[in-house]
Length: 512
Image 1: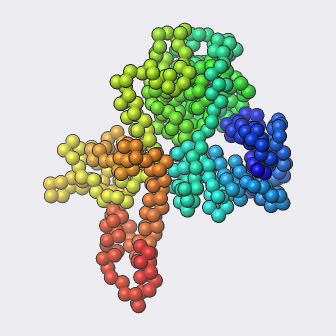
Image 2: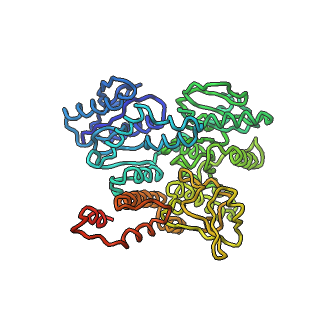
Image 3: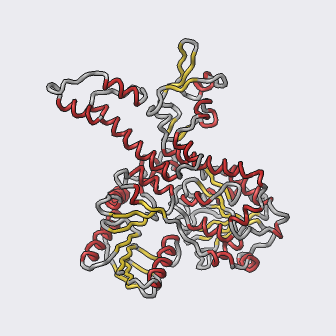
């Protein structure tokens, strides 16, 4: 087959670049005629014809100019299939390895200082990127989507509900297992100035602010009392500010497996990462990994078996607890070595912990679903939450919740005042019924009937329908008063409409 692949820029290091290198090599080996369209290329790809794409302009317009230039070049030739690794205007297959730009902006707002949040995403660059993203996820422009995590599949379903779910395919990132299992630990430690008594955290990645390195540096600043705890940082970025003395900077490495070989625990805390290769590489090296729920690669983690997933990358207390647990495991530091695979690591855990591990994995998935939904709290499903004997209405009122009392009964009004950006701000003190409530998606996920991606897709589809219902209710003259959606619907439809007098209202009612 005559194949065209698209990637704006290519370098020797980086997850997407390594993925593309392996893909090109495999396609050439399979006998395909392979063409790569890119602005620039470092190194050579044997058997691949390189097409230089000229795309000038400002930072805001450059991605659009590249997409338009590639479209023109492709129209001048004939290919059996076009696979893009960039947001472009027309392709048979788009691999969404970079995730969604709009979700990245959501995460930036979530973790930015309060005064900076209104400014995030307001520039021309971000506006143009989201416009281009809309073109890419238009089902008329792209026939198939490849995602590398269930997390990204759910994000696409939530933000682009018009794209058919049966045209979104999950293909996990591959890893060269043999490469990461044959590095020499002793030589690697000597190379980076580490002793066998050191306990070494490893961070690998560029775009260090997005990937949580500032929090790790702050954590290491507070760990100077432990002279044997080290952080090995492999990045091509220039780090602003001072670096604690217990942090070792390696710069970019072509043999990144040596960094894993030297380490004891991968610590990778991104605020948004579609599916980081570093997690699978670390696991292949035998290292446990601590990452965040904002990383699609968290789906590889079985908590308590091969690592842990943090709900909040700023949660240094939990990071410290799991670092200490990993540090204390095994007979001694001098004899500790991570097992060679996830299955090997699992063999060394008592069977009595299996239930806890499964429970933790389910809890992490449930947390991601709830943060994508919120419909049990925002007035979509319920109008009130009845208090139970264990609840304290007075304390809940102090927390800012809207409590009511009538006929000897206490209840909390919905939408919940504690719901902020789909996140519960009183989670540890929430009412009993909130703690015990399990929606159908959580129940089916727990039973193994659906995957996390299936649940996220259902949530996204439902939220889209809910917003449409709210729009139609408003067109029918309904004024929002905090009632549950079902009650709003019943109030509107209980009033008859005469078609001959109000034809437009009757049509809207019919749509509703």
